[in-house]
Length: 250
Image (cartoon, rainbow, N blue to C red; front, side):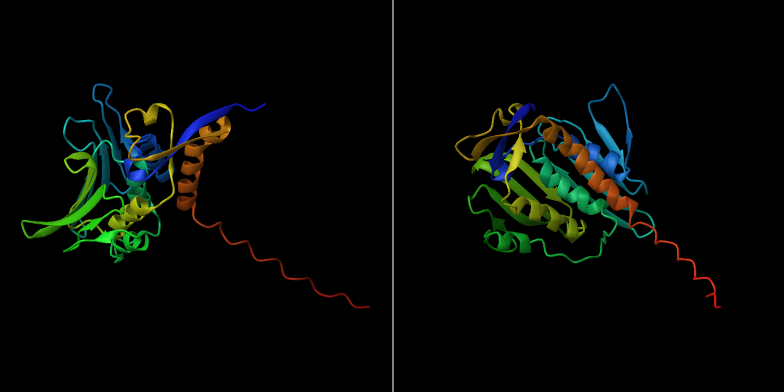
């Protein structure tokens, strides 16, 4: 008889808690080929893309963002960065890193960040600001030093923010759109018992469900395999078949 593991299905996902950071870090390293530095004296993870242009830093800090994603391309002059608080659900951050590491990624692609929100019934307020149907998430575009930055905040109450995400104005819109799409996704996210501690039960819908332990353990490896398969590309074409030999006649 297979062992069962109980996990919580939580919605809305923006109040589901951070989850497991390896959903992002291990996937980038093992699935997308990002190298990592290791300093046993520092409580941080630093991952660098194969082309050395992008870096993800995870560093716990009091009253500061924990996640920092930055990009610098000396050839094109492209420079941008994004940051996420420690309580930002990893599914939202992973949506950004998955889009960035997609072999078909095109920084010039003009995706509309708002479309996923409108399709999910989110509210448009004014000047590009938006709000989730439950009123717990608000997004704004702030003008700062001549540039316009994105800031998204999830809160339990008006003065009680849970997490904030920030995108610099030069961040490719396709990456912002990926974050918004994951944010508006109504699909519940899974959390272990430990990961539900401290969540506001009044603000979320939480349903416990049992899965085979093997299935739960395979979730991250399967995610890594999917990302790695993108890098592998399509299989090479089959070699041409040998032409038929001369037909024998009598």
